Length: 203
Image (cartoon, rainbow, N blue to C red; front, side, top):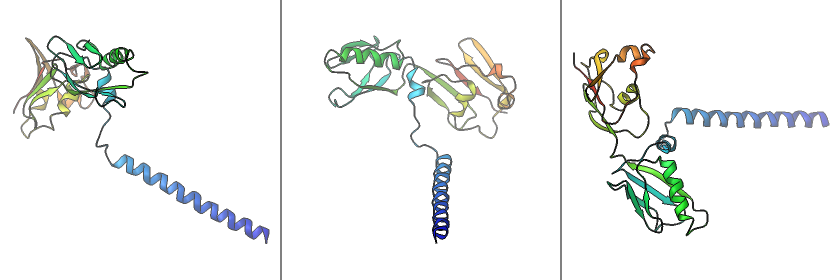
């Protein structure tokens, strides 16, 4: 009789383990198959250098009066209640967060400050030509030509992918998408700078 009870207990335990393992596998598959609708931009924006006319969303934990959207003035300053005038332009988002936190410590105990870039007005790049989405794009993080082109929604039918070029003032940088996308001539995949124009010509 004890042996029978032991066997039944082992069988029951095995079923529990199988069900638990199945649940873990299903949850993992769901996470991998369903894209995150709200990607975390913290890593992308923490190192972003704030510029004049940018718009920042500043949230102070448990303080709705201070939490608001603040524009950076043309002189690079932001005016906040309690904190007063604070220079934002030229600082990274993380550096500015620390500056705001330091100011607020005179009025609050260990304030929790969260800052996100609500709108980029100081740094932009442009994509023109045979892509789905043309126009002005915010330069909120470090981008290569390949990264920037992914923002354009793909190429049109007659795009000349091997003759793309980047205009930077009087400079011209050639970019062969067909080769770079296959890991060749990676030196062409330069970092995009403010006011760069990416041109995708037509056949």
